[in-house]
Image 1 (cartoon, rainbow, N blue to C red):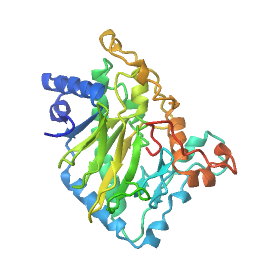
Image 2: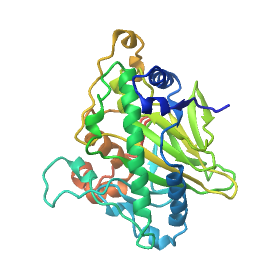
Image 3: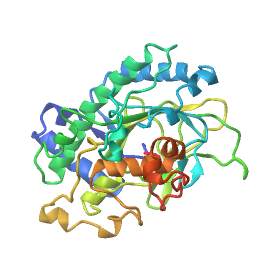
Length: 355
């Protein structure tokens, strides 16, 4: 029996307004009111894309260390590139993982641009020259997932009593999706001096996150006060919501805390996290819910235990990235964080410092 609910999108994709499509809509909303995480199947993405992405991810992490370090994320104001083991933090503690961050290929703002600082979150990716096939595979997968994410948000819109296309403007025709190709190196049994934090317990901050896992478990979800392992399920993506959706629905939908523990043994965990978030110009104001749903809201969940959730997504995204990457903050955002003071890496409890 899977630890998380399994939802099949196929009927909704065929006809959102059919009886089976409506059943999916209601099922999805109810799961996000309670558990906050699901496995998604029937999404229509070619499994060959997943296989190719994991294959090239293994090739990337097998590159000599200097080749990976040449793509250091510190070089990118857009937070694109390679993060070495222990250089990203959650809740003030180092995460034991390394990763390659990327997004859609974009131009960086022109020199001297006096617009908001979050415009610097757009820019080119950093790819290793020795793997010329990596960009096309990674971007093809992101483009395929874009369609899945749009369908999920359309289902949530209907489930919240909104028009089908309520959230489309943040993703069509342009988007600011962000992905991480992640390795969690296998390690010995944890000790006091070597904690097993792959990624610390946190909420995600945006709208929705998709997670593609290899065969090695490690993702744990907080359900009814207990951490439950979300075992890999072939052909599925794990889907959860972020703090912006929880806040916008007055706590009706949940941004559930979760973490990743380091694998033990001799096989690394690989995963790809796709943060399905709108364009940075998007605002996400409170959603006017129908009375029957408004009666089920939970304002105590609205503020996420003290973390400030901005309605302008660019502001919200930059806040989190500055917190999780102080090296990038100092090099590219000294005007925001101060020239001699790194941003705090201590996040409020159960809030994301790495999304």
